[in-house]
Length: 89
Image (tube, rainbow, N blue to C red; front, side, top):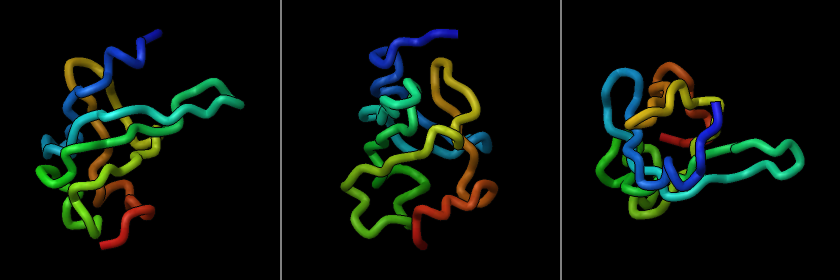
C-alpha cells in the first residue's frame, strides 16, 4: 500500500491501548533504503511521552518499527510494551 507523506502530517498518534501520544510533525527518511525511518512527533506536552522527555515542548522521533497501523489516526506500540529505550524516564 502506498501513502503520501503529506497525508500523514498532523495526524494524531495513539498507542494501541488508546492513549494519546502526539501529532505527526514530519517524517525522517532513510535515503539509502528509500523508506521512512521515523516519525517526528509534536504536541508531546499533551501526550503520554511528556514524562519521558526533559522538555515536553520539543519534538520526539519515534522509530518507524513502533508503528502498528496508519489510517485516520496512527497507532504505535505503548511505551511499556516496546521499552522506548531511546527515551529516559
